[in-house]
Length: 174
Image (cartoon, rainbow, N blue to C red; front, side):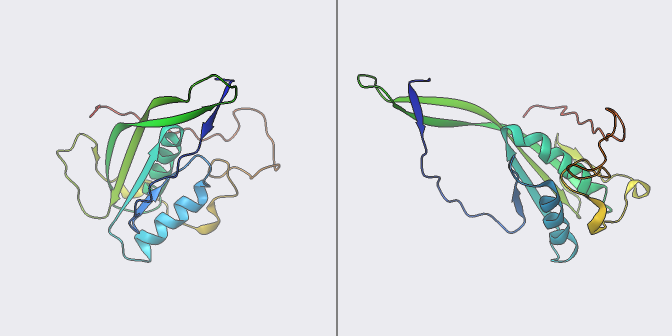
């Protein structure tokens, strides 16, 4: 593909609901968490949806788990799927034809709700025990590192010191 360059197609503008948060690989976790907790605690939303594709999926799962550990009583429903994305490629050399490639990209939607969701859904998770929830404090995050870890350039410790790891299992494919 070194003799081609990808052509940026204009994206179809689909309206985003106020309680829908689209997670990207470039976005800052702290901003997503702050916005989500503001919606749930201050703006009166009973439900939020975190949506992501591809490499942003692991960030979305971590954000959902962190929010559940800051707000008591959140029910979760996770839906996974995939979508096809078509890329257009222009030739850089004369004599070559334009190309079209299709990628199969994974998609996740994590719904967090104060009210009970469909408990028969394969992606349903009940709220975590209240004793595992620590109320949200704005200064809990010191940058883009893991929660409780210093921000960039500060306190570089040995490997394995203070690292928080979350394991998440998807048990059903829809």
